[in-house]
Image (cartoon, rainbow, N blue to C red; front, side, top):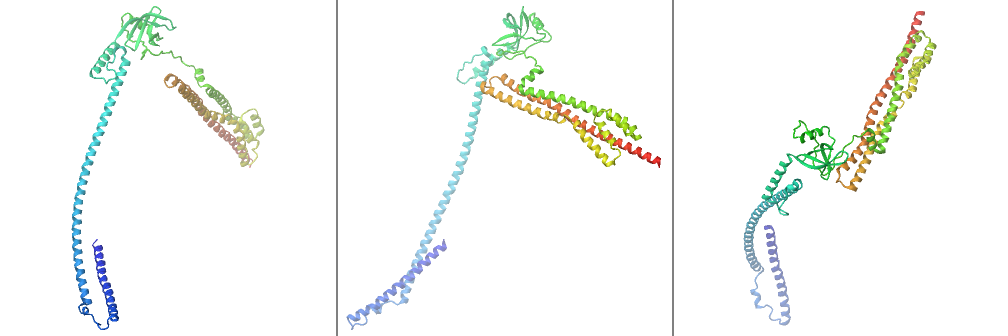
Amino acid sequence: MNRALNSLLLALLLAALVTPVLAQDETAESDTETPVEATSAEPVATTPPAQAETPSLEQAYQREFAFLQGQKRDLERRLMELRSRIDRERGGLQAEIRGLEAEVVDMRGQADRLDTLVFESERAVETARDNTDLLASTFLQADFTLGDAYAPSHGDAAPGTEDVAALFDAAADVLRDHSSVTRSDGEFFLAEGTRVSGQIIRVGQIAAYGISPQGQGALAPAGDGELKLWPEAGSAEVATALAAGQRPDSLAIFAYESLANEVETRDDKSVIDVIRDGGLIGWIIVWLGVIGVLLIVLRVFFLQRASASTGRIIDSVSAHVKRGDRDAALAVLKKKSGSTSRVVASAIRNLDRDRDHLEDIVSESILHESSHLNRFGAVILVIAAVSPLLGLLGTVTGMISTFDVITEFGTGDPKLLSGGISIALVTTQLGLIVAIPLLLLGNVLSGWAERIKDDMEKAALRVINQYLEARHEKASGAA
């Protein structure tokens, strides 16, 4: 800023210096022209009397310099005054800013404290609302549970201390009544549905026994507050003992929660009933399982015949092979059947060939017999893989049907929903029941077939070796 002021003062100084010079030049010119006009008018008066008092150029410069020095001092004085005023105003503004900042910090602290108070107030209001809802739910549940033993008197207003005390008194009375055994005359249904009159012994509100000339025993809910005779073993003797005032050692009892809904006798399902619950997909899985079991039985039969004859075949032809009597060995093998006999016969027919060619012939014979040994193996494994997928398909279909039931009837009946889900899972159960044994037995039988192939190869190589050893011994004896 000082540099700008100095530049401004220098510019003003130059302007002040240039302006008088230009004024002097104009004055000189005008003075030069004026004598010419005077000469033309009056030639006698050539020199005017005032020309001797005109200041010189140096004096004019000195006066102008003095004038500019005065202006400079005046400007410097004004500049100092301006700086002083600016400093005073700056100090005042900084003090005002510091005061405002302190005020802002204080107001911010007050705002934080107010936010904390608001948060605590909201939490207190929420807690009070929850407690009010909990208290209202408790009174509503008590009104439903205690029944006629309690009648709320606070109406729509919030319950007070007296209402809470009355509620606990009523609950204590109900608890005392429900923990005792009472007798009363009443009616109940027999097992065949006949309504009879008799005596009902209630064990609190969780069990009851009925005694009548037509029948006695434990009672179960029949719906709408009614009771019916439940076929519980030993309950008739317990009911008779209780009616006589005795205390039996054990109670054959049917415990219930309420008498609103009827309890039905659950019949044990047979295997056919379970399969029928799976629908069409359940039957398909079952029939695939039957086919898989049949194929396993046939495969076991084939493999048993192939594996059982291996040792006997080697024993029956060894003597003929050692003697070099191939026709006799082939005659023995012709009477036998099975894969091993055919592989050994193929090796005996070609014993006069070189060993590499002979081993190729044995390998070809084993490959030819592999199709018989692997019979039904792939089909069994396919059934084992498809059965769980069919079960999953049945489950998805059953769940879709369950959701349709929910869409139509809602979720008010848990028994209806659980029944649909149970039926949906039956197909998965059937699929796993079929797949697990088939997968296990199919792999076991495949391993058995591989071992039979190894035994056939060993048997053929053993026959070849016996023949070559016998021929070598004959050649050594002849030499």
